[in-house]
Amino acid sequence: MNRYLFQLSIALFIVADAHTQQNSDKNHFAVIAYYAGRTASIDSFEVEKLTHLIFCFCHLEGNRLSINNTRDSLTIMRMVALKKRNPQLKIILSLGGWGGCETCSPVFARKKGRRQFSRSVKKINHYFHTDGIDIDWEYPAITGYPGHEYKAADKSNFTSLIKQLRKKLGKEQEISFAAGGFNKFIDSSIDWPQVMPRINRVNVMSYDLVHGGSHTSGHHTALYSTKQQIESTDNAVQKMMALGIPADKIVIGAAFYGRLFTVHDTINNGLYLPAKFDHGFSFRNLSDTISINNGFVQYWDSAAQAPYAFNRKRLLLATYDDSMSVQLKTRYVKKNKLNGIMFWQLMDDKISGGLLNAIDKIKNEAQ
Image (cartoon, rainbow, N blue to C red):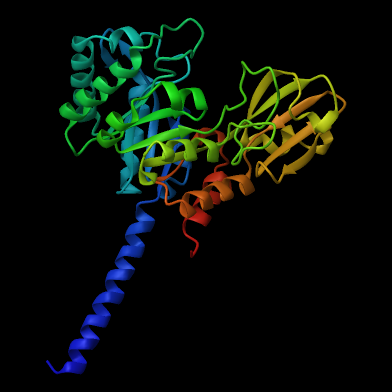
């Protein structure tokens, strides 16, 4: 081979390798949907735009992971069948959810409980041909669902649980967990240096930051903090990275639903006022829920990079994600080289042209 051909072949190799790396980077951008919808509905969504689909929820029966009923089993099987449409799709089982982890603290406090749970996870994943487990314990070591047991030792017990799961599931099965996106969880619930090397990713619930127990209105899923509200997606990410958590294991959350709060004044269009949670709504119903016909005026908070709407007559504040805020969150993932974006939940999206489409558009745009 003469010198010119040799140099040309090297150049072509570098270009090809760069192209492969570019494709590889795109493929490593996780798009994760939690799903708690009807069995038949899952087929209608554009699962080709997902990397992971998480079934919600499994529960504890004694020390073991349990699928509640035939309908849930059929849903899981239908989710696994979606791999025919998207062979790269990972189907993950999730334990718990808000109100679904009543016995997590006592069960995971015991070595026997952790071992039996880990064995049951492996057995169920093998039976359904699913790809891993997501632990949605709300919350270890701090107050969560009213009446659920929690104690300081949950923090170390959670670490022991993750160690046992990784030992039992090996390297092929994925392990993740849903983390509260607020300061108290980040500071108190998890032994991050011990847990993070053993899991594939942490799904940060950067929503419900203003929730049913809040006494002040605000953005429930803001991208950035404001003078009046510290809790935000960026606040959670920066705190976690300051603790040494690798960016490429952090997944941020988008809300495919909104929250309505009753306030007692029209100041600041309802933001940052004494408030009481009223009810939630799905993104698929957003245009009707906060329409002008329903008395709402829509606003954009340039500091929080978040939308909101206010009904001055009924004193109702709506806080939610929309296409713009979700696109900004997706760009934030790319800019900060995070693992990806997840959302609660797919059933709240439109069948086409919804928030999943907004994520996919930004994921695939040129840098």
